[in-house]
Image (tube, rainbow, N blue to C red; front, side):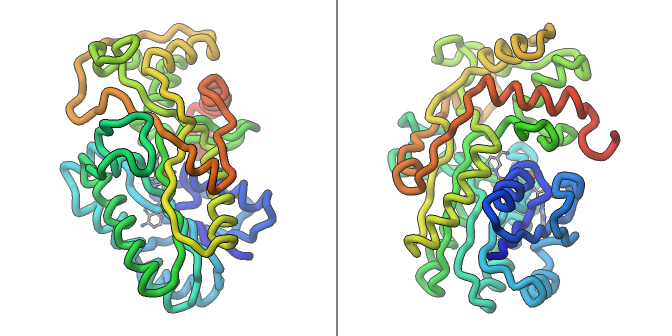
Length: 329
Ligand SMILES: NC(=O)c1ccc[n+]([C@@H]2O[C@H](COP(=O)([O-])OP(=O)(O)OC[C@H]3O[C@@H](n4cnc5c(N)ncnc54)[C@H](O)[C@@H]3O)[C@@H](O)[C@H]2O)c1
């Protein structure tokens, strides 16, 4: 079975490409390479181009004849999206529209979508399940993800196209063999920022907010290993084939870790000193969010295996051996 993986040369996509191939799937990647890297999917068929290019998408479907689509292609900087919402809606909603139109034309039945816990905004009930918080995105980025999720509901009804919306919490870590990982040139994520400071590539790491109502005052997030996320995609595809039912799942570990815990773990794993700068809260940052991932466990047969220590250890292996990422080695 052939799977088209859009955005497959990016961070989570490239790890998923590996899992798909390990599970016996044939894979073709479509990626602009704007934020992704050909080296991350070496040995896999890669087409360079955008899902916003409807003519190219049609060509890819004609030639490659995929039987399922996993769509990672999107911009993900929530802060940037506030100042430039149309960039986000154009890519993150317009792209999926093109893919789904092609899927309908070519009768491709399964679509797996990279959604995000940001569809909930600041959750009032923790752990956040699929149903115990209203949707309330607090950025155009989160809104773009929710818009696609809503669109998928209508697409399912109209065209019998089945989808899984996978709402990732905070993806982190790198492949267990240390050969692929996150590109930290563009990242705003905590783990790479902490490790940059550990390697002395930045003078310090900022802790935004030390007076949250959390055990140590710093913000709490659910860090989920990228390999766990990648495996969830394979399970989600199997689920769609088995049940022929669309669904949405929260993907996290079910455990929150504070910013300070992440830094302490990074100090222990890297055996480096990390300079910390305590600064004020950032507007729009929830105090705490972590997932209730029991629905994914029940229905997908998936459960995160890797803990924070493994996340930091694998990220450290990757970043310390590839401080300049894929391109400038
Ligand atoms: N990283 C996280 O913590 C996180 C959390 C929740 C959701 N997500 C979502 O998961 C997906 C993957 O995230 P990631 O962390 O791997 O990001 P990433 O930036 O590493 O990967 C995205 C990839 O998509 C490509 N791309 C972007 N627009 C494209 C387009 N129009 N056509 C083709 N390719 C395009 C980029 O070049 C890049 O390779 C995104 O949809 C993101 O919104 C990520």
